[in-house]
Image (cartoon, rainbow, N blue to C red; front, side, top):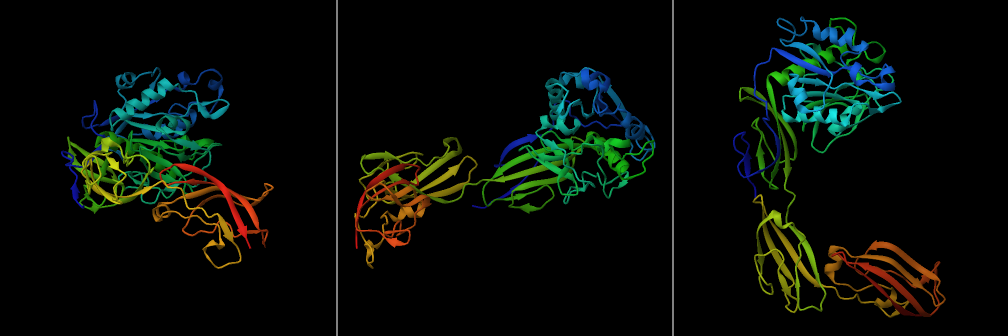
Length: 507
């Protein structure tokens, strides 16, 4: 069944919307002429032994930030009325953040999280879980609440960052033009460098999704846009540092690639908090459906699609659509009955909550033709059933069932070597259905009368007429006599049975 699904911000028809970060509390679109960029005061948040470390508090009041990126942000020729970006930057130090309300009360629109490593270990942050959780919850409360999150502090966002960067860093192939970090208002950035003894790349990401915006020389991601929180995740605070810790120039002017990249990041921050809402939709559709994206293109492929549409609640809106197509398709399965019980039920191992209707064909021998687990009369000769299922999304698919029995295999008791008849090899006799759906032999062994192992198979899927022993040992035919066999069969339904006995070898 194929359908064309058209997406609308007001109605999503019959598709299922799994998750959406749309307009949250305090998230109205109000024109912004000045953006408050908050950070954690390093004099307050670097305590104890860490306070003595020059690396603690790599943020907007650090000596390697004040003369470089901070001077550029404070320069109204760069940021402010009549500047390169018509958005003034107001930098606010915060001294006591433990709750989301603390951040809202401070008026923050952008939160530059910064890096606060333990004096002995860059992979440990001195920020408390309480503080990081407050920032994270604030950033996810509204898509226009933007956090810029580096290094170990990004762990709360679900990212792992490791010291593996290889310069230079450059734009990732296919990075969306909405995120104008490399071709932004401050100019084109061919590449930029990380600096300092620690240079980070992103090595693990959350399942909630992300977009890679920059990568190092090896292709490892160094900047990502997190789709759950609408935040920027950066591999290293050195992107914004000067002197030995980064290549941002000292002074208020924008002079090199690192300057342009760092200023483009804050220009993007102004754009995101001023002009855009971010909508992250995860949608589930039927296999074979077509989906009409906001840009007018139709697709049947799963993945993440980024578009910009105009005018929702006075804001332009970045829509990231994640498409998951229902994995249900027609499939075959085998139901094995024990051959003893008069009535046994059919279990399809399907979640009942995801089923809206089921129809069995034929209904002969079944206790019901519209229930998920009917009882079956094993004395009837029906060998094939169909279950036509409609799931909770409205997708229809068919399960073809073959009915068989857990009968013991045929095991030969005589092996006539050096002959051309069917008794030349030790092989098992099983129904065609078991071979079709996969039956496995495990721990197979042939032993002589003194208990010596003649041949063995540890684990292997059986094929029809598969020879398990040809009566030979180390390239020579064994002596006539009685030999012992042992093995286990693993059936397609997950059950396992042990078999053992003896076979007579004649020559």
